[in-house]
Length: 371
Length: 111
Image 1 (tube, chains in turn orange, brown):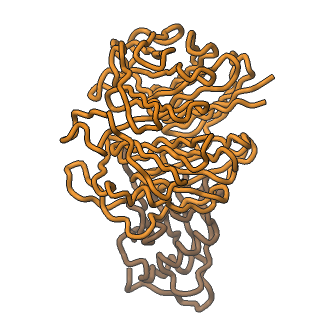
Image 2 (cartoon, each protein chain N blue to C red):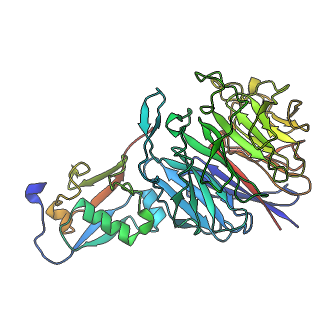
Image 3 (cartoon, helix red, strand yellow):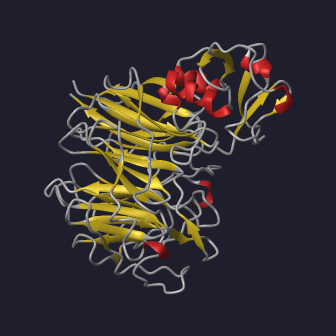
């Protein structure tokens, strides 16, 4: 029988949650790297026992860990992230130039074909790559050196590169997103990049339709439809059907379209999930009721999913990398909260159970579907 | 500390270094490790030795590129804060002779 393995990164360590394909009874292992901030863990699609984990601390900086046995044991690998050439400046919060400074790895994206190849999205925003299992890292500097780079500025959480999408149909195509610069696409494996933000409207920047400057919170893609992208922006849920060249708003009947996570059903490319958050000033669900919203129409028409989720006095947040889907026949959907819960649905969101209630604040959730 | 700096012996120094808890876990090391220093016993020489013995600690104490101490790392010894002296300055003889440990501390921060 198939199994699922959830990799949960939290403020104070990593946790690995496993269950068989029924997804009813869960085993919890952890904390791994107790006391460290674990921004993201992700397994290789071609070797699920190969897992990369970003480990960091305000005191001791960035570490990178690698497991070759599905998270049973770990080894520290390379943690040297040096910007290519003169780092230069970007815009600070007050609009003044500010030197590019490496802070942490927010997101790891293992290659679709090679377990030793992995990308890292970092703060201050840049894309790094390792071709040797994480031992050595090289900046893919065409992104940061884009003509608009000096105009990028941080969002409230820092100037992070948080989304990396690899196109399974075109090994040269990469999408990334940065808070608060926007989304970018490369068609040549990362050498050159194009901002893909046409159609985004952000009232909190001087020119609401500027080429860059948008606070994109997360982007998602179904592997069978690599030209179709879904975006949770600071405000607005967006969709593109031309690889990001043009976006349109698909918030539709959502009660609020502020939020962080967005993901796509494993088998239904038009089924999308978001967790609406009240506002940029109040990072918790509306009316203290935690609701996942699902659209089966690729946006605009949304239904609240509440069965098994707290519907009173719930004031948690769901951060941008804290939702994932498995690929079992009945698609599993998972998300973690800043209150330390990890919720699982084995029926595509119709009903939910809390696997764990009291972890440290959850920063990221990934899931592996294992044979 | 400079008046008391330097070693009596020309033999390599065996410096006692205390690591903070998170780095002990990371390195799989005990609370106190012995670091052999061949030349003058300086902050830089001790950190070179710590990093050579425990390569996974590279970047955790000082910046990879600039070699500058990370902001929330402090060095104490002989009752003094040694964080702000030059990394090339000789440390007190008691540290060089192994009578007193060189303490690597995560600065107190937060509540």
